[in-house]
Length: 104
Image 1 (cartoon, rainbow, N blue to C red):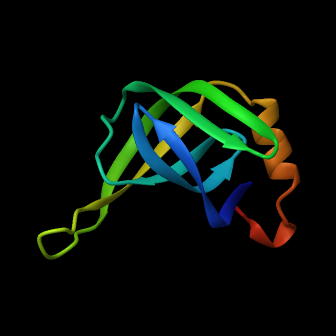
Image 2: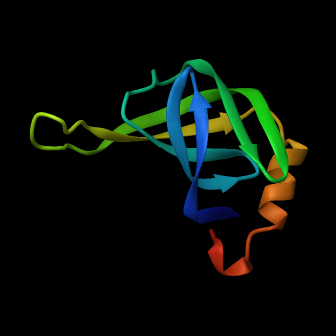
């Protein structure tokens, strides 16, 4: 199952600020302003009420989601990350999500 997060969770991925958009036991979808290199293994850190997840993840895909207009605007990207193994922090966070957020 994959859980869509109504409130995005802040995270750091490869030293970049990102937001976790959805989460599953095997990975997450992130929103960020800079692209990640597909196929690369990068550092990932997310802190929640359930604890801190500090691990290495693989980037299987990254795509442009939106392009901003104007001098201050920038592009927004969505990137997937895969956890190497299920972590207790992810299990605890998923257990606390309401079932209505679950989609296959």
